[in-house]
Image 1 (cartoon, helix red, strand yellow):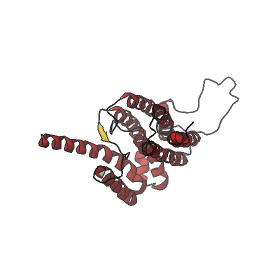
Image 2 (tube, helix red, strand yellow):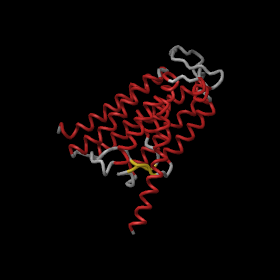
Image 3 (cartoon, helix red, strand yellow):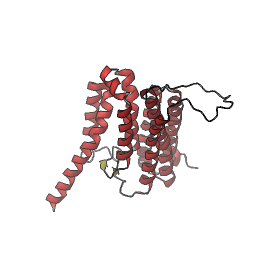
Image 4 (cartoon, helix red, strand yellow):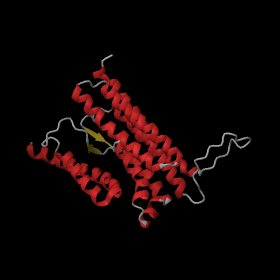
Length: 258
């Protein structure tokens, strides 16, 4: 077995490992640490493709492994986090991290709001998006629909804002059940919508061919400095808008060139 060939796969497994730890924290209700390990997993997800291209060892196995890792880190965890947020937002619903193994005759009962399960629709939509990505040959240099890591960052930013930027108005909005339900619907739609978005993964480091990527990263960095964690949803929404404008610009360039 070639060590060189499996370096990208090892990085992908680090993504999966980080996501698995994030699942544990999310189930326990520690959403800040869950967000931290999701961010770490997305970091590894960014570099596994770079490693595969740099070492010229891209493989079908790596593609499938990448999607399986993303399913946990960027699919399962956001669904659980949304479930936990809805538990806190829905009236008369209190989250619990205690485990009671001796259920007796109450094995059909549960101590959470049934409506909170709606948050897991994010996980289902993420799975559908990843499955479509694996068989869609249009998404080699760009994305169709919001990538699951971007959607995960959008959702995981909410507990970070609550913890590190607890402005009363922001807290009131984020812990509003209708806002969270609307965000679930938005996520499910934008993950699978036929929206062309530029990819943030670099094939080369040249500025000319990656101008929009470098400028967007700079833009995101400036927003993070100014708004801290509140910048994350602003960056994600900007990503969608800028992608649409950039797509329109490319189409105009082709028309003018012809």
